Image (cartoon, rainbow, N blue to C red):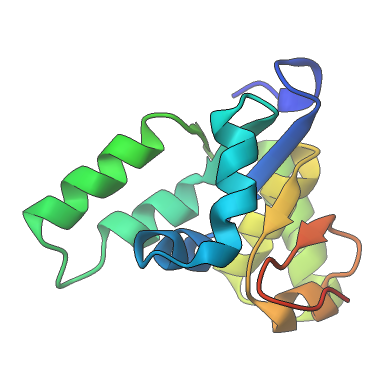
Length: 139
């Protein structure tokens, strides 16, 4: 997919899996992020990794799957291409993070997006990714 740096709103949010799980649980901390998305002030993006993690949950009900599909239909789902893979390798080597986390962080970097996550450990290990932890502190 093409980079979002030159399309639509000036702000791009890449939401990771835990952010979307909290959203589905009704966490009010994510309201400002989704308000910006709904008002067209921010472009919503997810990595294909997040889509796989959400839809691959073993106890997912049909209703949950429908809710996830409906939400993701309004997001750009970014596949792993050579640029993202290359950046993920760099991040994995440099910071010793798990492959899915490296791919998600690399996707945020390549898409020039702000990574929205509650994974404070990831944010501390990868300070070069622009990020927002709506639940608390950022590095």
